Length: 467
Image (cartoon, rainbow, N blue to C red; front, side):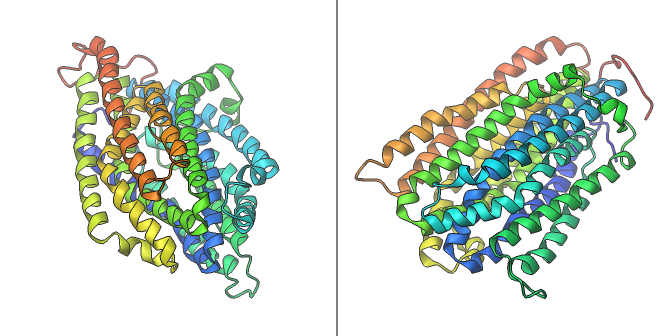
């Protein structure tokens, strides 16, 4: 149920919300690990194709941030300020905006998605698999937008448990459908790579419908209605203004991912398959820390709306400590027995060797990545995501350009590509910390003495409600 995040222990809020979010994110990631497991039985070209198409998934995921990040930040701030009218309007406008973006996205992916992934793969078989998977997954990509908008509203209100249950249900559907559609279990009509895409699309539909039904039942602040959903350009503009830098940041992640696939394409499909497996496992490792970071966003947002500077600063401190501890343990495990996480996804020794080397090197940047996630969520809570974008853009200089330059050198190797990636993440962390310190000075200084020092939130600005 909804929570007043301006009261109570910040650490408890982070751990309780983060635990639910971590479980939900684990099940969300299982969508793709389940697909990857069954697709891996079709060969390295199929694995590489699905992994290549996954870059489009990241691009669409970034586009959903245009709505989700802006909605979460603004709704959380309105809730913290006890502005129920504003929170309600923003949730409805975020949903209508998401529906518009979802329709556009599905159209663009169906018309141009195949062209976008063509040529990225190491060979024609990889390109064909990528296009086949993407065509079936296009409706699921569109459904990500309304799901993101509804989830953002719930997260802003501190509601995380029920959405996690829905994610679990979605994965159960995916697990049931994947062998049926991919391998033809029971039906005798295998769809191959396309079956993986359809399994994820159907599962995404189950989650989206469930969120619509769940939304009015787990919180009392926001109510969905057609009248409130009618486009209001001023509200859309506010949401986009906060979300656009976050979208651009995800676009940069897409660029980085695409550069890796392009750089290693000459090594062969086994290299792309190994990187695809390694990067998926790394994303899974990040889930607990990302969950804590995502919990920090609404906590910081509500307390920023309540003009409570001390609790905003404490949110970052506690989230940073928790994320660093988690990442240190994950780094140790990756160096100790990282092979245990990789072996189930390929029987190709060459692909496995690439994945092991990748995970061993990039694991050294896990703590830095955790702090980057934490800073990013704090920027969201403060309602200004431009600093996070600036830090991410630094990787164009510290990773993209050096990696491309490396391809023409006699000492080019995948190992050196991973080392460049490690260095660029550490540099990004340093920039994030400096920019967050600047944001704190600029945005929190005026709140001292308004409840920030005493630890009590300011009186509600407008639209106060009970509960």
